[in-house]
Amino acid sequence: MGYPVLPFKDEADAAIDGKIYKAYDYAVYNQYRDELEGLPNVAIRFQKNDGSVEVLPVRGPINGSMNKPGVYTGKQVDIFSHPETEEEKTEYNPKPGDRYFDFGDVKTIQEYLDKADQLCEIKNQILESPDNLTIAPLRPNDEPAMRGLKLAINAKGIDLDKYKDRFGVNYPNNKRKLTDTSITLFQMERFCECLDMDMDITLRDKEGNIANPMKKKITVNVYPGNGDYVHIENVDEDTSDDEDEEEEE
Image (tube, rainbow, N blue to C red; front, side, top):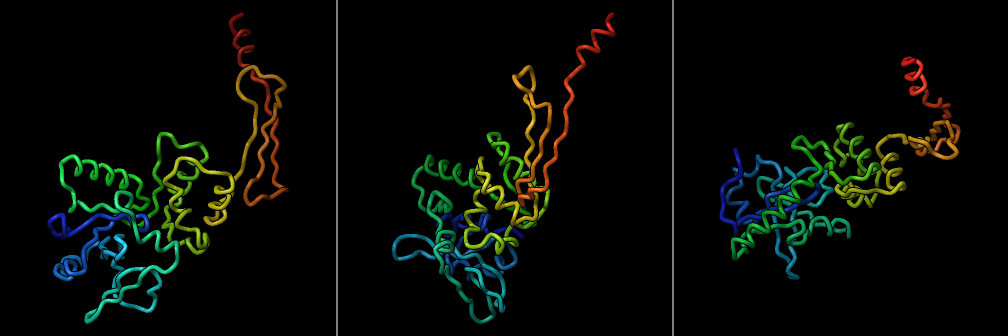
């Protein structure tokens, strides 16, 4: 069963918690509740007095662990858990054109196309696959350190949200960092700490005829910073050209 086909004014798309949600007015959700309850990534939107929009994911049945902002459904009543911290308010109050796309207010074909392009770009940045595994998006202009981190996280096959307690209150910013193309050494160390990874750095001579070569390959542990781990490997000079000349003679 798919999402019901509704007029643009009755639904919107919102990027929340690293996913794209279909956001409905509460009255519309109740009207189509039987169809929507079994579908993933459904949310309720609320127009606030200051003109902003709050989007609360439908989390599922009412239970004892309603510790995330969202809508918890019951047979007789639904419970709305609104964001309280500044980080939560930022996450669940997405800005129009940034992480919230309402096609009900478009007035021209060009406006519709522009908004559709913006939504497509956001979808390309989504960090979760349908089975809730975190997928860091690889970009052609990723710097090497960021590319390495993204490949490592994708190889782990994890739901990053299950590690959020390790990251602490800055977790939303840490997660959003994975949509970027660069990262600092400090941020790399933080990801290694929270995701049970070690990180080494290897220094070696550049290729070609260089001044004062080390003739060594030196590897040190950067995280967790084990000072005892220093591996030095001697590197022989490339003698392949000499060998080729001897064979020709």
